[in-house]
Image 1 (cartoon, rainbow, N blue to C red):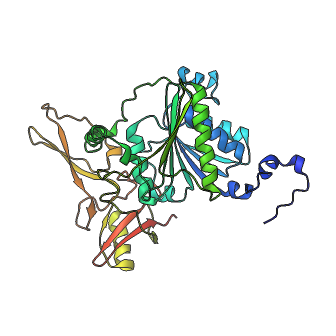
Image 2: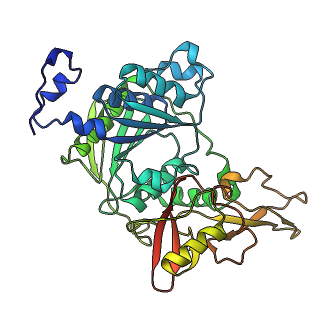
Image 3: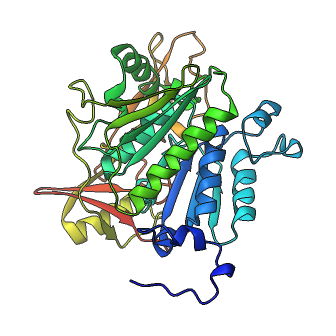
Length: 380
């Protein structure tokens, strides 16, 4: 396709269009998700805005601190105390009004729905904790989404390109110690609280290099060009040594060894505000479903039992809703009772998925005798 520019000097993308394979119209239609609005997030979002990426969503629930000002190019002293995602989104819009940039002040572990993520073209990881990466990686695996994950450490940095299930995923790169520690957190109520951050010293120079590399790989992905999928690329800053490592699929990976990516989803003629009983009723009519499930994605807590005195505490919802104590009055530990199915007889069938703490724009499954139908709920 030939694009004729009548006034090239008035076209802000004129120099980009001179690249032989560049398609600015493809960039303007692209949808990117940036997870984390710190030093790396600043660099990635800055580049996406300059490149004219059509839609960008920024996810971060932290506020700007004074220490961010030495490493985050788009933050100013007057921004201290403001939400990182809000400020970064506004600065990106200032850089390029052509871009639709939105902030999501939420926890990526609990509040990003699978159906929303399924509509994203490229996911950039700019996170500073393993648990966040773990949850994003699982969602990207289920949806076969490319996850371009960046990491910083002093003057060192790397970019890992996960394109599951064909390549290794983030979980494949974890050691047995890392897996054991993560399992402790994600299998109990402690995972309600974010992972404790260990502040790693970094410099803006390496953030610029790694963020630029992430964005550049993303551009190649969006153009259908070859990318270093299944590799980790990086730089040792003190020695100026670049490295390129192939990431191997691990036999111990809980995804590659036990889970298949989700098939194509359908739309069920029910609303996110409808009760589970109503949703199941619609699924029975359309697919002869016997039950609803979310077993591929997360757990629903239906009660809490003390491991010492046996006392039961009433609570029904996902872990993201729990605000109670981790311990009983007797000093014992609360153990959650988990459910992954709704058959129509459970007492919480009058509540909606949203009310139970599931993220908006999510994917669920209807279980029938002969098949499992993965579906989204129609919005009203």
